Length: 303
Image (tube, rainbow, N blue to C red; front, side, top):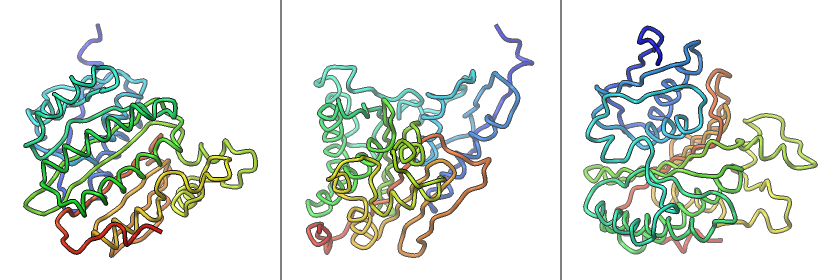
């Protein structure tokens, strides 16, 4: 057993604000980089000051903990973290369907769903679809979302998850959601620890994409990494779903892969190359979805 002197204690931030979506991501990447840039092997992550956090802060840490090769122990977890099943989450494909549905029903009157780890391989598409259908149903019931917005939510979420599966080459993906009823929006984060968008493009025989920034730009232009005639039409289409989210629902979209960041909302539409010491080994997608909109009609955004 390691001596306590050999353990580096890292205290997690006390409060993660939801006011600006990108701030949550930078806070989580900052915490992860403290570990990556340290020479220590053993760590205690201390959450004693953390009261509540956003999906885009929590989920990258969950995926990192699940995939890193350092010895990390989580200590002093808050009640909130225990309620969202941090850090391991639920793995619905490893339990009976009725058991998963019963667990999810416990969240039908809450403002969040637990962290869920779902199968991300094409061979398990049916299992993944059944899990996400249950997740969508619970969120719609939690927030009493009208049918017009509910259809848009399912459309946008389906494309985001298909994008993860298409590019990840990863066994599992992760999803976590938290609503803010007083502000009228829902935050959803989806993440994997796969090969990144760049890694996926590099697997193609005639690839010309050389870095993370080019890869994230290509993915958001609808250029598929699958060498199939109909590959660019896979899923619902990321361009269509982003327009539905931003133009239709006035929401926000963030994607990070490797050291490239894409921010897309009504005020800010950028592709950003991050410093090389800030890098995510996989892909993160975050959605901020305002869910009260009587005028929205998802059918208007389907091409």
